[in-house]
Length: 246
Image (cartoon, rainbow, N blue to C red; front, side):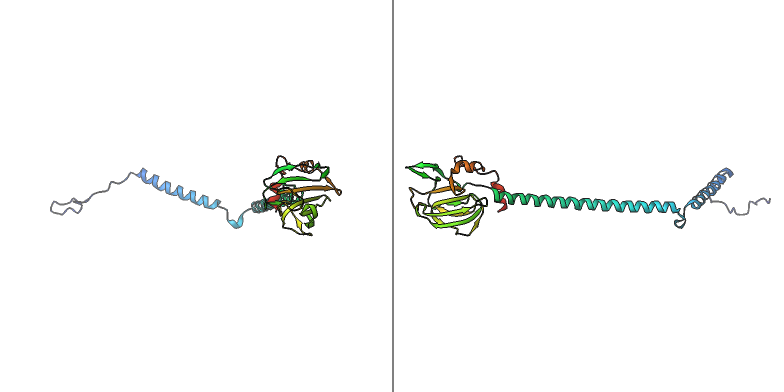
């Protein structure tokens, strides 16, 4: 090797020398690179091509898809069935309300004073009960039916007779004014007239009679059997359902 003369400029003066790593470090880096590449290549070689998927796997996936569709359809069918059941329940409730409206018996007046019972009075049969109320107070049909008579009727004054489906008849007498006429079909709770004192009457009141088989019966026990207590002024428990169905 030629020795550098002291007169020659030093080409390396002022430069930093990077230390040379030992051979063992080079070996580790190179080895790691080769191993990593091998792992990637090995993984790539084991990745299945979607075209080469096993038919059994495809069949399993298809079966799972069919099962999911069946479960979704069954859920929808169950929801529809529940909806139909709810509709049927609503229809049943409505039907029950309509039936209650047809079967209900009510008080003829909102407020009244029970003044005279059924029985013999002054040697004659008082064939009904008297309910005192101010003149002009509206009164209602205690049960649904067809009006067979409406007008002035001798000692009854202006009166109304309503025949029910079971053949019983209810008479409302001494009215000041009638709001229905013969042939009308009325519902329980419908206003049909106003309290008065026409005919053979002492004071303004509503005279109510009930006829069974053409014969007058005491309205008190008759109505009590049907949920209406005249003396306690209590109506049938189905009065609310009848009002809802009207």
